[in-house]
Length: 248
Image 1 (cartoon, one colour):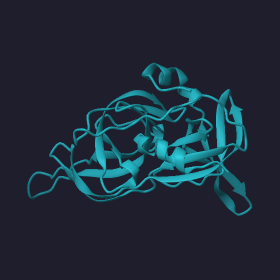
Image 2 (cartoon, one colour):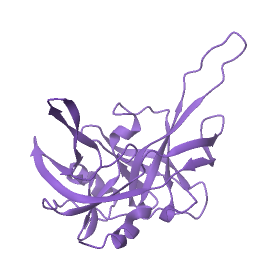
Image 3 (tube, helix red, strand yellow):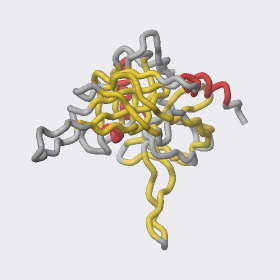
Image 4 (cartoon, one colour):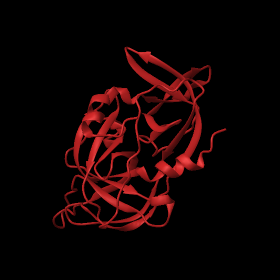
C-alpha cells in the first residue's frame, strides 16, 4: 500500500471550502421597512489549479444544479493543515461554467487577511486504470454558528465556524464513456459538502477527476445511492490549459 501521508500533506492546503451568500427576498411588514436578510452556507469544495488565482469545483455547488444567480456572493476558505485558523478569498469572476460537465472554474481575489496564499495542485488528463488507488479531499458539512456581513452582504472576515477538510482513499472501481464523455466510478464514500473536491491519482500525485455525484441503483426495495462518480478533467481540458494549470 502506498504511503498516503506524504501526498496528502502535499495537496491538502490546495483544497478550499466554498461559502455562498444569498440575499433573501425582503418580507414587507406593516410596521416599517423590511429588514434585508442573507442566507450564508458552505455549499461545496473547490481546489486550486493556479496559485492564488483559479479554482475548480463542481458546477452544481453554485446553485444546486440550476444556473448561478449573479447576485450571489462566493468565498473560498482555506484551513492550512487543518489548524485553528481559516482564511478567506473572495470569488471575483467565473471564467468557466459548464453545467453539462458539472465543472466550473472560479477566479479569486486577494485574501481578507493579507499575506495568505493558496498553493495549486497538479492536474492530469490521463486515465488511471481500474484498481488504481486514489485520494480524495473535501469539506463535509461545515458548520456556521455566526458570520459577520456588511449591509450589502459582503463577508467581513469574522465568524464562528467548524471547518476541517476530510481525506479518504479508495480505488478506481470502473470507468467508461457515455456519448464520448469519460466517467470514473470510485469506491470512496464522500459526504455532503465534498462535492467539487479533487480526486487524486498517486503516481504521480495529480488530480484527474472531480467529486460530483453518485449513480442511483434500482433495487427490489427502492432506489438507493450507488457508486460515486466523477467526470474526467478532459471535459474542460482546453480551458484548464488556457488558465495556466500545472498539467503533468
